[in-house]
View 1: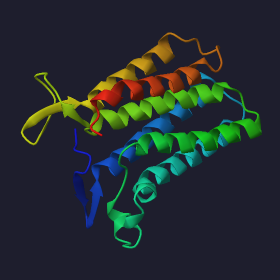
View 2 (view 1 turned 180 degrees about the horizontal axis):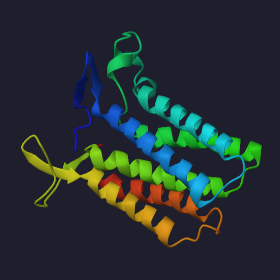
View 3 (view 1 turned 90 degrees about the vertical axis):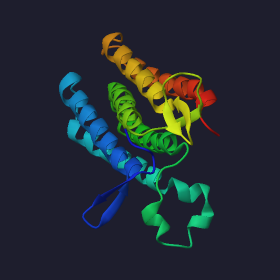
View 4 (view 1 turned 120 degrees about the horizontal axis):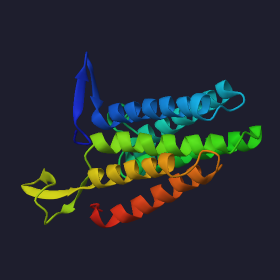
Length: 206
């Protein structure tokens, strides 16, 4: 696992772990969604569906990348900040919301099956799991014997708590809810994300 602002040197470029692993999560989500709409629940016009899903992911990725500039306008004057800054508090959730709003509008306008949104729900949960399992989130000091060490103290490994709850939600969605019960997987994804963030709130450092 990687610290959120750890950097990787690739050729002459330095990339933050958050950005690199966000890309991995996006690719994972897109691959999962493509498999779902083309193999699990075959939808009409699958190519158009996956094309718009890719646009939604790109919009979400751009939101994730530039989120620090919406929360801190002092970063704007120096153009180098656009290279170095990425992500930050609640950036992943906001990026998901923005991408989801775009895709929901497309689904509504195109009158696609609700089953498409079920695929989105599972793909988002799986992408969030991929990101959370690899990028450390430090919580407050923990009395437990395991956690992330910071400033000589153990802290709650919030990303582990979040990732396993997300994986549980994916499992419930796939194994417990029948694919013909349209809309229920998408609803479960929304409820799961909200509940998980509420459950994680007491552990996260403000």
